[in-house]
Length: 280
Length: 309
Image 1 (cartoon, rainbow over the protein chains, first blue to last red):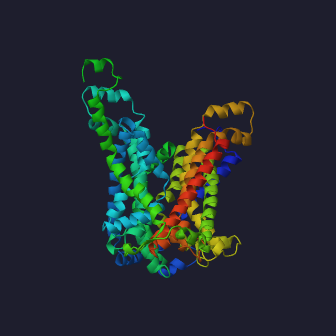
Image 2: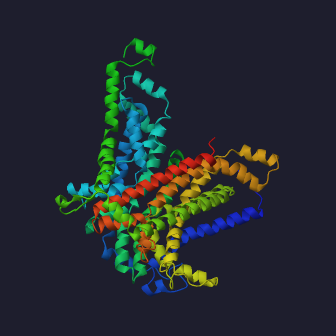
Image 3: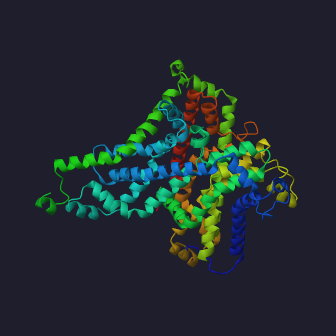
């Protein structure tokens, strides 16, 4: 703690805590309303004052959602795409980070600078040519069209390289003397020592791609290939004018996995994001 | 490896060792760099070329070179000014709110000494950040309902008239900003909190001994030492907000009219509804150039106010 306000309940502290508490309510309120509305009847959903506690736990709306779209399939799709991208990034980014951090080869720093500069390129600039490319490769409307470009992360390489640079050279030297080559040094020394950084990268990567809307909206049109955010678009289109409860049921189901993961792993998520922010 | 290598480990390695290391190096970076060439560099160059073409997706052989026509078409489109103005408005308001509210929340959090309370507040602010924008925007689209929405109901209790959050061209923009700030404020608060906790306590102790008041403590110690964090978050917020798409798309689909249409929504519309790919590429390039220029300007001015230790 760097502030020395003391543990007194002075007015400034009380006001701060009150405002923070109000903010907390604002952060959670929409989700509480979402859960409550998902259990209400259509009419109740529109009644005022808004209901924060459901009068009964009706599952009608949830059943409607499942009948309308294969939401479990969509969750599996999201999991598949996000999982493969995350694992792929961990492997490829750590390998590249090691190469750039500890191996010497002609043009190394030049290649790294080139890769780094690509962080400035927004997705929307490259999305049209990538779309055309996927079309040519007959990969449009497949999960591969989302996974393959997702395996490249200049940020991931940068972030992991920063960490690798802090690993003492003596460890490498002694391994080299024992006859270990780069691969063994990488897998036996660098990877085991990088737990926090790797999990931080995994967490933010997973979160980012799980919640992604833009690329799936563009690349996936097949009914069975869609992801969870796209399910929300579909529900909005079908029930937007009439049935709030059904849409909220869909939203609740979409949020539930994230909520569970968050409850279990919040410390790692929070630490991970702060870590990537501080290093980046 | 022989005895002399052990005695002088830092000496230049033999040619074959260097060669092997170089090969290993190339192998390690190969997957990423291959992907970089195929999915980043290649498309970047292709976008530049595409922007000068009228590209027909279905029959590419029909595509023809049209020079800078796409660009002139864009600059003479009145909607172009509208979407850019919208986007600028979003960026300025959002970054301003991210920094100010984020800092205030972090400072208030910093006063909370009880670790459990501080921790639970931290994570509750963070929860909206980890959910999908699609879900968040859909929920808010109902909360912002003019007649039946919860927000107007509670405002009504305070004596405020019903606000047409999503149906008025001005209020719709505000709604987008509110949702985006609500969703992301946890990230900024957390970053500021980390930055605040990095400030050595001795500085504040010394200030206390000198009898410095609260405002001076803030302006002379906290702000300068926090300036790198502020700058970093400004850049991040700026670049992210410029690319805004999910929130306006899910909240209002760009409406009413074009009131909340962002540049990226415009690109999406032209590239993937009208399949006018050359044009969409051109607009994408303008976005890229503007982001780069404004980022460089910010970096340039940062020398005046960012203090690095």
